[in-house]
Length: 614
Image 1 (tube, rainbow, N blue to C red):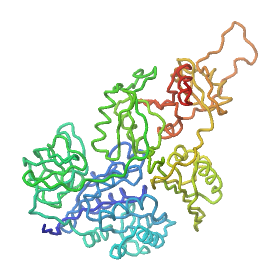
Image 2: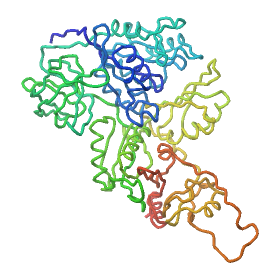
Image 3: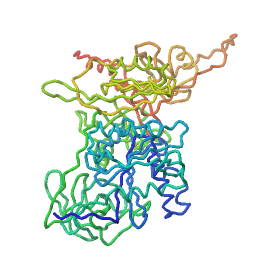
Image 4: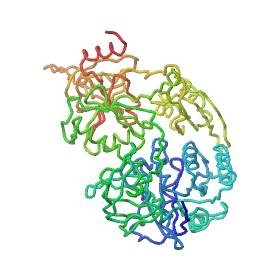
């Protein structure tokens, strides 16, 4: 079919490792465009729109915005930088024709830079390398650029791609320059390079309609909104179309409204033409990967391929005695609520899998990593759900009659003095050292190959061993034959034998041989984990035991009780802490640890089942 190049449009994705400044750079591009009032740009990281993104300081969901420069419309797609959200990156790259590859001027390319760049090269995007944060005191922009070139070579880029354009910038300070030693006062050189170096979309304006659904959102007013790039033809409000589904069937649909991205929002238009990124309203049940096409000449596009999940958890109802009780209790408690919410998440979260389990009230939810799944859990608790979550388990595969498990590349940057503890921790988790380089900054760069199950809980141990100095990144590598057993948690836990409120008198006795997870006045119940034992065995305790009262006053018996503050765990830390016979209980106001079997008899039966004893 005849293809034409649109010169009035650029579709650009911004890709980088986590915390290399993508969203901050977008802020600078918005400010320099001159199309916004100051009141619209009065905060940092404007595209990090939901609470979790702002609190965590990371991008979780890809965002679309549009601005104009020199008469050309530039659609900008801000993508996540964390490996756990790689599913977002893989699908939104389908909408772009070029990409800005951001690299920190000090750190250089990192593990996620490799991942997203590989995906960009696979779909044929034209890259521009942006060496960001050149105003850092420890910046080494030329070395970072050289390392990025080496990464392109490692990924098998052709000669044309290796001759990539590059520019130096500071997203926070709002400038771009061709010479890192010369600071300018504007980001416009980057915009000029985008217009000059990134091609417009190659389209067939007169062909039959083709648009792949690459992103989904939901509105309580209009229902599902399907977003994608029109490859061929055009689309108007009221037009009859068909959705080509995964099973090859064609489903007739009618488009109610066509919207294009404009600045920070969307505007309805009379027609969307080939090359435009549009949002379609009115399709009943679009799914990621479906093609919106002409009913008279349906031509489906190749469906999006997304890497498979590597980690699974059991999501089940909250069956603790405190379920649905107290101020701030959840509104959604049943398995029906849980099923509906997980089904809704599947509509947009392409890297997620949900399966029924043997227990009708439990579901096996699989994702890219602990962070990927914990973001979902955190969203659910904020929406008013209560649930219990089991220990993360890696997803094994049988290949050529032998069990294989996912292995990951683990990158650790630590001061030279802390290399020993890091090697000991990773070695204990069946990790093998692949490379070690000590830089001029005094930091040692360690690269390991490690089973994915060895990573569960490793971050906390490594940060403790290095006094918070370790910088840790990991990403999926490949499936390899099963490694030896990975050591479990070294310490046992304290399990409550009663229900009530924790008492300072009882906790004072317990803190001599444990780290406590509860404070006086906290609600506890039988089977709830209230602390970590100093030994390797679990111990049943009574945290609600009060002091016996007598009529006699004895010297020294009424001393003040001084308790250490309880250890409070984040959701990710709790998920990495628990063992196979334990759950994390998640409610809108609390995160608790508990045994799956709440009574001692239930725990004995469970232990016998795990040991294979009838």
